[in-house]
Amino acid sequence: MSAAPELNPQSEMDRLNAAADAAIAACGGDLRSTIRSLILANEFLEYEIAELFTAVSKAYVNGKHRGRREAGKTPPANRRDWYD
Image (cartoon, rainbow, N blue to C red; front, side):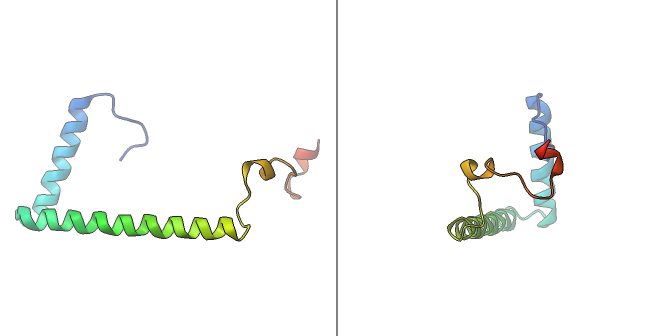
């Protein structure tokens, strides 16, 4: 996926159709296998997101994450140009 949003809805539709055709082809043309594979991939991504949220939450609770108010108070020691 590109970082910039698509301006042409037709080209976005073409991209999605090509991706769907590629997924179906990867599963040998079996639509049930394709759907099963996509569901499994989606569940894996949901699991990964949950793991990331847990890690971020633990870092925040343990004080490894500085909030916005704290981030602007003191510059890092290795940035001499901030003191000028």
